[in-house]
Length: 318
Picture 1 (spheres, rainbow, N blue to C red):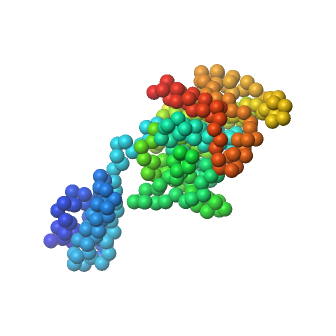
Picture 2: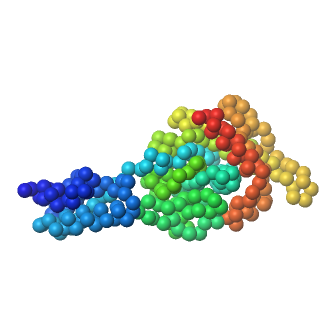
Picture 3: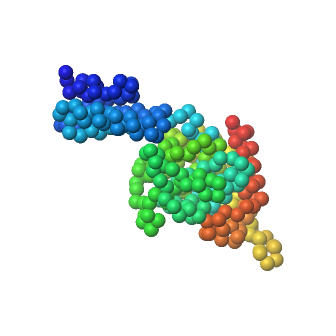
């Protein structure tokens, strides 16, 4: 009997169909164990049983099992929408966080994933100070304001930079979307980083979102990058659901007079040129800034209206 045959013979009969890729080299027994469909306690028991069986085989000094599990068919969120801008500083993360809360207030099961690996801001926007836990080898999002949220900022030291190259950051983003324990979500919003690089490409190719929302201020400088982001997602086959004009006007808290600090009409003109709707116009608000810094999203008709418009755009695109 060969060494590998001895390992195969030692596997409990009820677990044999779940064990594959057997190997024995220099005293180390290795195998892949499929724990898909097993409850956590049953999966742990299966691992322990195979480890005991291998350890009893003559010549085995160490055992290394790789556990795998097929994701359930309904494990992917029903809808995935990216919130992008192409440019930093336009309030995209603030829009994504408050939009997620507005959608949750409508009774939807909502997740918010922070894809900005190098500059995560979702924990602060939602007032999250706890760390994301790892259970059964799956990352557990943190609940805040009715939203399941996950960010690299919940897994690393907030005072240290994440100095990762593009491919590593992209892999981390895909893992958080596809391998975290999101549960049965109606909608997962992904807060994208600025730019049109590796993370955007990985999102479109591996995650395949149902659509993307482009956020921009009315300023021409911001619109240039927003148009680039729009073009990239269209090139990659991701439906663009519409544009959001952020910081559209500033209303003086004393006299109520409104001023278009960043100009006006630019987002509407860009949307019309692309045949897209403007899903919402959000004012520049000191109250929203203060609430964001405090990690306490505030209810407001602007975000409630944006939530309704987004759901309508998703239905139209379906």
